[in-house]
Length: 436
Image 1: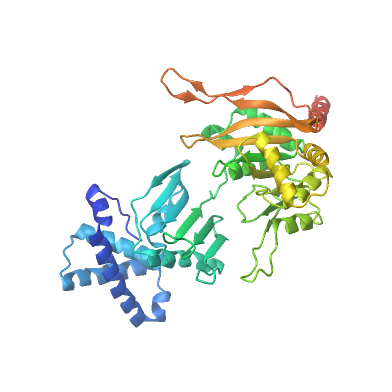
Image 2: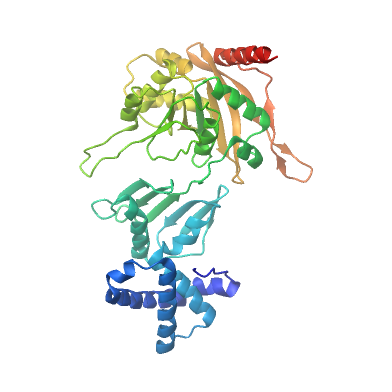
């Protein structure tokens, strides 16, 4: 089993030093020549065998070449070389760290990581941009995606459900740029989000009621605000007997539901042939007998089909959208419909939006990195040619005596007036009376 390395201050300084990079590169070239001698045999070795091979070769190399490093430094180099040959090099520990949400590489000398919504620079580094590209190609190999001059941009879903976006020179001026979004193996449940402080029990009760009543819900928020995690949590309220179709550009949703059909768009080849858009998938999904349709992110021409589906029988559908407020969310829907070539009047479009959407859940990332539901608004109709809404809950943190903010969600004392919720409440009341 590969040795676990705990970095002391001295070890950390050595790993960050140019001496470490030089010896590692020197030894890496030596190992590649030895691997060429071994041929196909090396490809059948386990990781443990590769670790032992590296340690033996490095020990011999250090002794023969009189390399001025101690036993501890030798082990650090052996660990790094094993990750280079059998794993994902400098990225391996970050990919395995469950606390890491995003890995951002801006050239070989600049690596940033997001933990709990906060970006921080990492001390790890690559030898050069070619080193970065070599590791990225190893990540892309299992999914059959190419990265070269003919394909300088790659956006792909990883086997573990994460997402990777890569862009290389000459499009990326300061060196190769890599963005890796990681996803939890076990999606957060509503109970998890309550513990994390994303919302409280009162909001959870309203959201459950809205989903069970088959209300159409849009989750609105900015980049990395927690929209996908919230959408996953909302889906846990969907009854098991319903058929759910999810549609995404890159499949990120992991619904804990018994009957889910997952669809993913296709960008097409280099010449643009074979493109399958979200709009195409949405049109096709209507022929798949869905009870609910979930659109991972609404950002294009598919908005028209989504609104039509929500307003004509596919109640209980959900999606996310990039917007900074509930009102901005409505403006964005109008803008996207206009870009998609909507032929009706502005008034008819707003009526269609009001008829399709029941609730807008606004989520945001606070300055400290915490994700919080900022408001829940109900669409109530169209007044004076404007889509009307009422805010049901609002996030209003309280400044404590110790100087820290305490989360608080204020109910504005307005009960949802949606007839869907009224019907569900009547059914629940009737079921209770029968049991009584």
